Structures are given as C-alpha cells and as structure tokens.
Amino acid sequence: MKKNQYPVKLFKAAIVFQDANGNFVLKKDSRISFWRTGKHTKGHFSGVGQLFTTENDLVAAVLDFDDLKFSKRHEYNPVARFLDIKIDPF
Image (cartoon, rainbow, N blue to C red; front, side):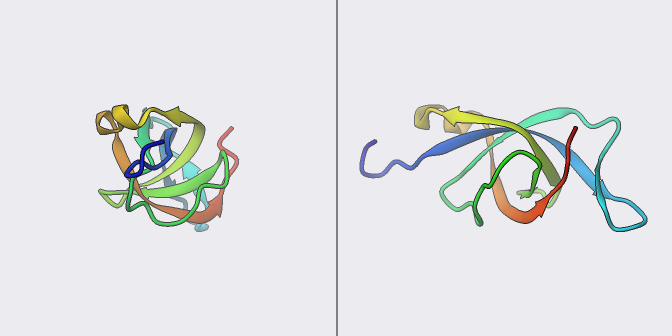
C-alpha cells in the first residue's frame, strides 16, 4: 500500500429505524445499498449487524462486507460513523 493510501472496506447495508420500543429494526421496503470506509470515518468496524450513520444522518445495518480497491473508492459514498450498536439483520 502506498504512503497516502488507507485500507478501504465495502459494506452491503440496509437502512434501519427505531420502533416504538427504541429497538433498531430493518425497514421492510429498504433497498440494499453500498457504502465504504473513508479517510474521516469515525469509530471502528466490528462485524455484520453493526450500525453506522451515513453522511445524510440515516442509520444503516451492515449485512455483508468485503475489501475494496483504493482506486475504486470514489464509486461509493463513505460511512460517517460506526456506532457501538449491533442488531441481528437476518
């Protein structure tokens, strides 16, 4: 990896919302979207089911992830912040 590069992960995720009890649940009509880690992403990724916020202040749950080539990173929006909350997405 070159000096000014950083590891990039690609996340397959779906938007979640809080129900009346305050629990995060997947939206039934939520589309699967893709986000990536960015240079200024806050927090640390810990695994499938972890929640994160997007640049538009939406909350999403990670369904799957993979490595992404540094040169391909501009094809996806970056994650704003990883949260310390996990749900069972399945």
